[in-house]
Length: 85
Image 1 (tube, rainbow, N blue to C red):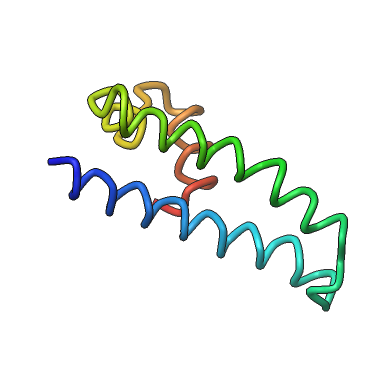
Image 2: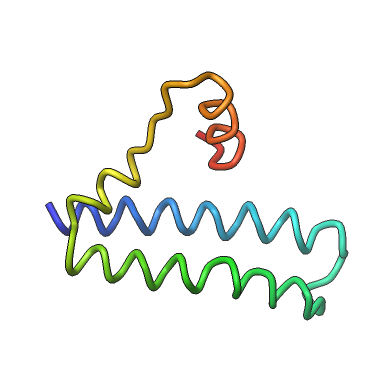
């Protein structure tokens, strides 16, 4: 269970990193954009750290967070647009 959960979490984080990287560095036209790297670090480092802590301490909570399905239409649309699901 934990291995499958770890793989699922890594897939979501990787997809988020790639999509965010394209949205940040694509318009800049370069990877030499320190504000973009700062933004990526501030956004993803806490996310990764919390994910590791949840994987170790509360894997059921991490699984629940990864399977977030909103019942309200507006929230569901926001989540679909933000995760690409």
